[in-house]
Length: 250
Image (cartoon, rainbow, N blue to C red; front, top):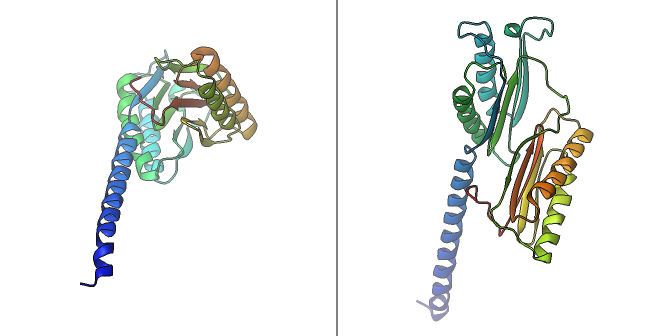
């Protein structure tokens, strides 16, 4: 073998090993990312309940199956069945689902299937239910809530560790300011601080911006200088974390 080829062979082997390691890490990262999407965050159930043999069961089952089927095609959709506000509660249902903006539709469908299975367990026989998983959101009610702005606090979580480092706080504020300007889903990074924010798809751009502005204010108010924080309002959420990786167990 010519000498020139012998000299290049070790470099090629090293490059191949590096590429193999990179793609392995990428695959593992994606697998972890997709598994995490099904993690439970919070739920909320209405006080009113329907009877097991109620006509509402048919509407609810249709809505839930429609949500799973639609999730394989779109990250967001809303539904109105019966659609008569003057009718009894059993005669209409309204609902929507939304997946995190960085998920593929196949992962959205998987997350929604998990959400449908869980929502029946956490809110049995209730006219209304809300379930937030890490990667998707599901809500239904017997009254029409679609498109009505709501910035009430649903869930908050502050990291156990706090930082007084000025650089961290500056980076954190830059991430939050960038996310606040989102009109749907946005990922933001600044140095070692990362975050993302999202609005529910039935909000207008103006209402989305207003909701995220409120979420950012509450993040700072409720969690101070925590190195990680989540705030979920009724129709939007904002999350940030330090060190490049968000640990949901923190």
